[in-house]
Image (cartoon, rainbow over all chains, first blue to last red; front, side, top):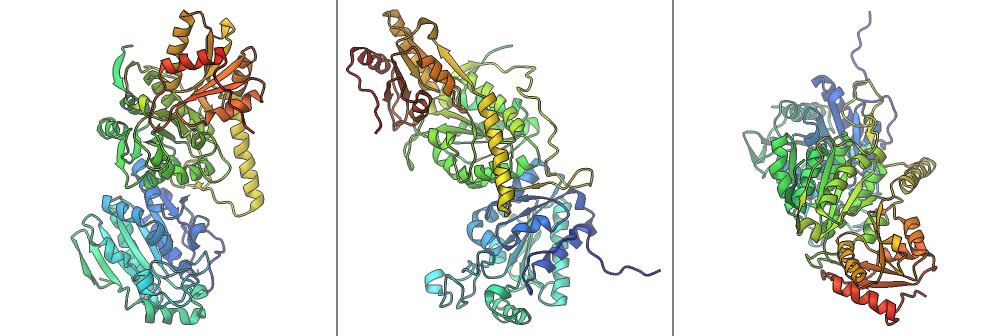
Length: 257
Length: 362
């Protein structure tokens, strides 16, 4: 009798996604779905999709969903969770959605300690609208609205969301991970599992920032995108656990602990 | 049933709770702060939840999330705050979510002032935000009517799966009047179970996605026509208005809504004592607007007087109703100033002696 060692998680629908080759949204979707399955909460999970590349996330997860307006997913998640505290609620947002137009919503959702989980996918660019500068775009990085590269004298420095939110006293869990190597993908799953577990066990706000690739808008072949991320993003966006219920630190604890 | 003396804002809050609304998301803005304050005190007593949001933008999106689970939910604000909610209102209408929004109007534009106004009529009745949609708009003229309309608003929102706006002015929120709450109130509509609610997918029903995104234009067109049919049904079934003095075959017909109509009714009584018969149509629903009632009531009148606390917004619907058949005169104050009964009396006298000019548009 052959043993099934790998299959599609139940929380992931059997459909083809629209994501570009070399983009890690697909891997992150799968990790979130595996965690939902393993915690046994799929039937009482409601997701909130953003505006951005993952706008169609509601087509890919086998859970109930709300499609939010741009940046407002943490407010929508707040409404769902406050109305139905028995549900497991997560938002899935990109960096334009969460760190630009939705900055007020994410900060206050975290600070109120809403019992929701946020998956924040940071690829340092606006993807769906065609490669414009994001608040997370790296200094010197070329984007369609900074064709000569991000000038920090003009546009400021990239925002480090995990660090910023971990200065708040309320949140239960804030971490930053990446999925560009198999080991880091395994670590990411452990962090996302911790984030959901905090919610399931009734503790407050949890967020995992996941660094992601965008070969299409970075203008590099998929195979080189992981190198680009490692070289350009990792030094500025350190991976680790920034906040636990015990306290926070600007020097993150290592992943996989 | 006993009457209680209550401030309008607090009565609105209590009415919502008694209509089964146990969720309120709001942001402070004058002159309606007593509504969120009352809810923050009362909701925990009934097992409900009050959240003070970081902005009206967030509050209205919390409404979207909560309404998507099928629970009854309300917010309140005043004019500038309602502008900030406009984005979410468009999504609520697109995703067909039932919510109740109370706008206690203050004078604008911009930061304007904090005193009563009716200057959000266009915003309330003509769609409010981007896209092709309407809100059902209810305009009370007393604290008691505010209570009744807020409770009806929840039923109408659930029935049509559409946001319902209760449009009052600063007076409605601030004045105290005796009110009573019906003890065994029945819904004004037969309400089906909310099988569309997004509350987790056990497989017992199809997966629920609360959404207003339709990338396929043919699908979006069908969605827009579906919404339009709903707004048509509102226009057919939900028109509400009250009339005064039409049986005296008045020479002048007043059209006014909200507390301004109360000022007008005082003037009408005063004029009647002097032998001048004036009638009034008071729209209670602003969308749908009682076009037919205004047209029929004006048919025998020599002239129509529109009275509003704006520089002229509802008057456009009266013009639509009359199609040029009857001369229209206009009396207004704006900026937070009120119309007095004396001003209405004086205006009617001026209409009678020919010194009032009719409103003419090119």
